[in-house]
Image 1 (cartoon, rainbow over the protein chains, first blue to last red):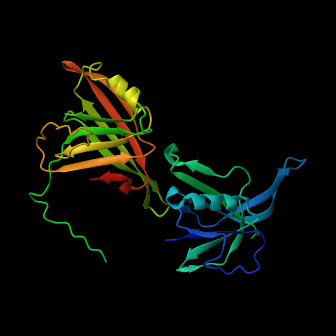
Image 2: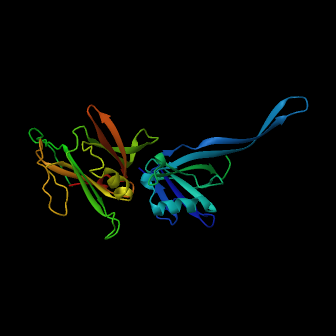
Image 3: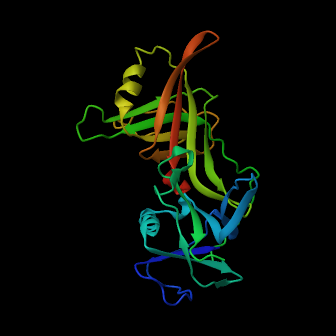
Length: 136
Length: 167
């Protein structure tokens, strides 16, 4: 059963309603797709009198998605790398037999998160830590 | 709809002992390492297994990602130099090769129509063949009671079960 759709675009989407056959979009079953969980960014420190403080700056929702080799062929591998470097990235969740609206997300920076199961070249696995672009 | 019903196994289970192993190496036409090597009369202790490589999912299920093929073949021929084992396994099978495990009354392919030893305790025949880029082997020589023997361990990997040909 499909759980999540990944879509990327060169420009910001003006309409966030899910489109079944959109270009630059693939749906995945995944082996892991967590529910969005709250992640906070705080400013913290110590006052001159020793009292500690923290100040909540932002709250975002984060999810972890793991796509395993059963869903990765050459085309999907290229798509996932294009998704990683794209300017505007969106996801949509499949729940209660319907696709939800697109949500803009951010990936982490750095090397494409690719690993190989049991170090076997034919078994690539990609793990994304995605963060909602807009704060709660 | 395809419907397959399997039944009546009584008196239908075939006896298929490992009878031989066949290596077929085709590097390039005329290459000295092109070879068809068949080893008959493997010891009864020989065995093979095909196991799934799986990945747990967060739904509590698993996904099948590929299959590992492993075989351990005990070869009773112990006049090693006379039987050219070092040359066969270190030189001839240096590159890629096709492997067939010959079971029961099945016969390995031979260029000159060689007549193999009679199959015993066999009521059927089957060949299990793997031909891919990830097949390889190790060679061991071990000592049992009154003699040394050669142990060939074979390791392979395929993504789909139908890449292992059962003939």
